[in-house]
Length: 226
Image (cartoon, rainbow, N blue to C red):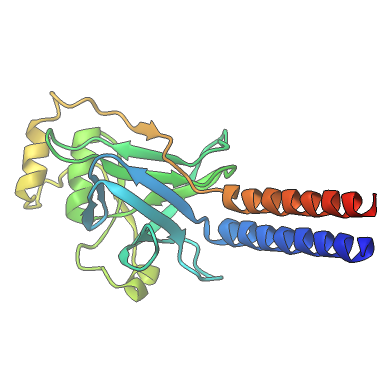
């Protein structure tokens, strides 16, 4: 009887360990990150309302620069976004998101995303008109693609250029013009936040429950033998 119990305990712990290892490998592959925003956030092509979202790299072995943003239970895809590699000399053990300022009264724009422990992260590429606006407000270059590039297939082959200001021969959007006139009153800084992230706590909790159950069974067996 004791042998059966020990086999049950060992099998349960092995199963939990395998599940936990598989989950960790999957998260490291697609960089799955659960983020909660308390305010609306501008992303390339859209504004995310305050709420919880899942960030992932698109499942592709050849292209590791496409980010997908889902709702909390991953039943709805909000955006598929092109990025370029960005480097951080000192990796953090937490998810790091940085934001760029926008004109007063508008949500901050998501700039970079670094997965825990990574030196290299993703810098988000904005449609050209929005990139010009961000460059004007923040006084630094912003990666951009043509405004009409939106489909995932087109993102993979799109040409990325950096914009620094409104070109002299361009007709900027009203938003870009407003940004240019407000640069003196906006503090041009990138704000780093440490969002809520999902980890392996549920799996660890399950392992602990199984161990407690196994200990209770062993105590009952010892009492019966006595």
